[in-house]
Length: 75
Image (cartoon, rainbow, N blue to C red):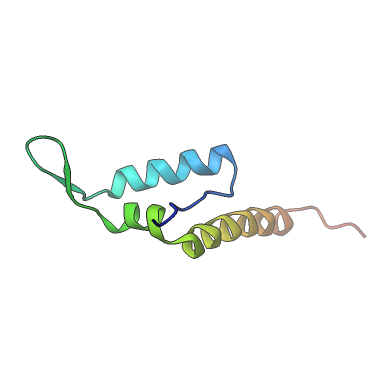
């Protein structure tokens, strides 16, 4: 049995990812509410640990780069 992906980011990053996935979800369900087709973003959550780790890394790197870009230089 395959282990689902583990989110190694913060709670806020998790909430932001969840919101983004919900905005882009194209999963399909039958009349009983059972999922019949899983969209790519949800498959990533379930099956792609490397992608999840990459999202955490890039999100944290982007934040650090923004802070450095707009920091007041020390002379």
